Amino acid sequence: MPKFSDRIERVEISGIREVFEAAGDDAINLGIGQPDFPTPEHARRAAVDAIEAGKADAYTANKGIAPLREAIAEKHRADQGVDLDPANVVATAGGSEALHLAMEAHVSAGDEVVIPDPGFVSYDALTKLAGGEPVPVTLREDLTLDPAAVEAAITDDTVAFVVNSPGNPTGAVSSEEDVREFARIADEHDVLCISDEVYEYTVFEGEHYSPMEFAEEDSVVVVNSASKLFSMTGWRLGWVYGSAERVDRMVRVHQYAQACASAPAQYAAEAALRGDRDVVEEMTDSFERRRDVLLEGFADAGIECPVPQGAFYAMPRVPEGFVEECLDRGVIVVPGEAFGEGGRGHARVSYATDEEDLREAISTMAEAYEALQ
Ligand SMILES: Cc1ncc(COP(=O)(O)O)c(C=O)c1O
Image (cartoon, rainbow, N blue to C red; front, side, top):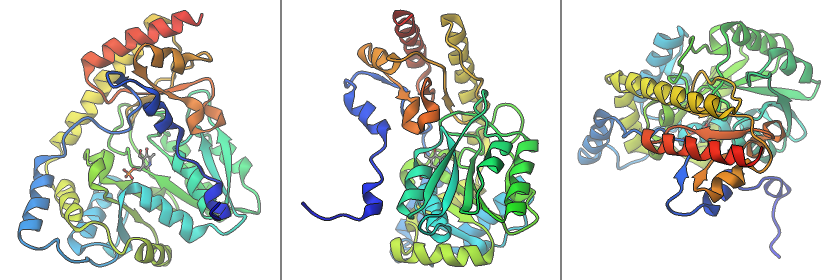
């Protein structure tokens, strides 16, 4: 038996995959976490042009090409009003790597990281891979993260907490008041707030706020990604930004694990950031329409569901056995507990799917629900 690290033995492949594997080929998949839009043409074009011009053949700077980091800094200046120096941006292999850098650079063995429960699967796993202890915090009834609960979970061992708005798996969007509180908590307790904002552009009601806008100390790092902002999940291009000191530490991990983000993807992301945003608006409008279709279907079926205000996920309350009943009928949804114990009693439904399929899946979910009553 080969010998493995204690850290790797503490993590497992996410439960989401298991559900996919159990499903038949013609199942309607409401388990997928990606937009169902093509990457914008101008982004694809920029990558092709860079390749053809021979600009994408070599390593780039560790942090990424300067024009991309400038475009990212401009984006955050325009969207959040933060005064961001492009030198303090690291282009990464998706938001996934950005989260990894943030954890590796800040978490030591035994340190605690407060994470939302249910929450995106990486927070728990990356904390463990860094040798830390995840401390899950139960969400409010409306599935938003309660700053008071985060504050109550902070101990002398806490080094960081993760905020994710709009949220996966919940679709919940934190209010301005809550986001201000997250910034205050990070400042006052001297713990890092890792703000995962990869669904930033998919907000239906209200607005997206970042703790970076309100923090008065060096207490926040922001993770973002072209994946969901511009429907570019396959390109693997995200970024992380924070203070010069924090970026210096995160680049040390990035340099040895990755060297630099994929060069063609960097050119594509730069073009997406600088290009026409009509596509982004179109995606958001389309997700909102589909969310409404889904919520209406749930209401008709008597399935209770907190109203998601962003991303493209909903988390209805479902009886035990619901996921299996849906699978038997050819619809894939993810059990809530795949995202933490707090997700038990819910299923995560991704509605980034064809509207006709979505309507069919709604009828199927209604039948599955009915069968369990
Ligand atoms: C909340 C959240 N953060 C980060 C990611 C990572 O995405 P990527 O690595 O494609 O940027 C995802 C992907 O599903 C996510 O849902």
